[in-house]
Amino acid sequence: MLQPEDLKEMRDIAYSYWGVSEKLMQNTYSEDEWNGFYQSAIEPLLIQIEEVLTRVVYTRGQIMDGNKLEMASNRLQYASIRSRVDVAFGTYDRGMATMDSALEILNLPPLPNGEGQHRYIRGEYRAEGAPDRKEETNEGRKDRNPDTTEPEIQSDPIRGKTD
Image (cartoon, rainbow, N blue to C red; front, side, top):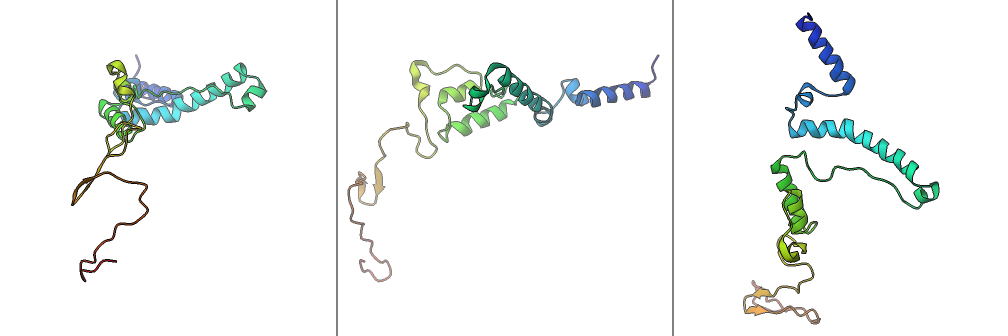
């Protein structure tokens, strides 16, 4: 029968050998602990694998032309739902992602009839390629006229004069 100190030493040797912690082995890790483990242990291994597979699959000339194999975990599958929501809508409202790609991050189906294929930008919330909005002025609504070369004359509020 092993003593508790011996079991602890054996666990520590195993954790050290495999580069993992007790939380990772018991699947009780936090998102930050998983990210740290992934970036320090898994990602370097994936980089080495993709370099070897690139040399196996492509000729030297093809590699020189920019061909290569890449391995990545891009679905945020291990992230918390809060992190996925932040990424989905942080990229969506800045125009970097469509609604369908934001929904994909959340493991949801795309919108029907291609409705989710437009990009929107925060502040404007208009479809990509849509015409400019009308500008609101004190005199009511006016259309922008980019062909006008004359600047608007502003009155000086202190002197009551126009420039």
